Length: 498
Image (cartoon, rainbow, N blue to C red; front, top):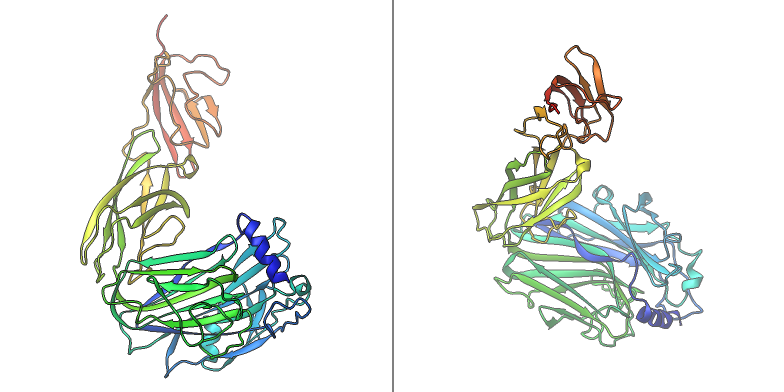
């Protein structure tokens, strides 16, 4: 069967290509809760190489307790298919939806066989329809399903975050990616920290996963804080078994939409949630994890103070302040800091001390700026950023983590006033390398141009004219242009008498 073939293949492939580690996508803090809905498009469990019929649509019902305002809704759909086969355009309640993000797991070196997952923000659609039935349609994998027969799957799910004024200080965190469990990757470990649980009650976690089998229970465990997790639909030895907590279905073929009560797995003052999943046989593909816990958090902010440049170099020292003014939990040491120019990472740093509630600390770092950014630029500094615009610390507010500082590497740096051209290593040439000018023109005292140079000038003028002949001692006038400004001035040329 194809399922067995897949298990063999994954043991020998060194890694899945295009896979995306599960990581934090979005968090909501305050009066928030969540629910999930979704359905499979398979008509039976996989494993039968002679039966591989699939649907192109299925439905599920959104149920939210009471009248609540929807804050966000995220649609995920997934199935078998390489980048050329994946269906990245679907319809939700007959409204066209196009994938905003995609991930692939290929299990052949030529990428002939693969799984895909797709994501789209459908908040506006769900706000429009509210609590009702949702139909996901036009998800059509029938053209290529035959080559995956026996190991095929296809399905969809929506994570809905809503406001609940009866809840305070609650974190709802949405993680996503596309990560395989099985074969050469028999365990997944996700450690969540940076918070302090204030009430264990109503804590919960949900998983959207694909390819789990109801009958394949070998070495499969889900542990949270080193305790095995199970419930009525998900036994301890087969957590991912084609079930749906939200609809109470046991025929969610080849996908799982499982929610677990965490009240017995966390306690007040816990600062870590350690999630471990293992398997000895079943292949499980993780797409989405949603966590909800009562907690307190820091609130990291950052302010750029000033900079120190070093004339004629591309080195700059940056001073900045990291604050935790509105947080109700300390901001831990080693919180990452990232520096960007034009959205390109140019440096990293980290805090060296814990910052308690209501306080701040000053830090500094040295950056070497690549030439392509010129000598004047806006430097963006982001706190709780590992260098990819993503953080590792839960915060009350994720939208106040950046600041900008305009840097001029030539600040307080006088332009050279003289050229001696005796090649003693001091003032031999007119050094404009920090400016990287578009052009340089030099005139004598009568206003006649005697030298010019286009792009690429650094310090080539040592007192010669356009023909390479030595110019006499005297005062000369220059003009050069950069992408930022045109600069004029004078320079004195000294020629030693031989």
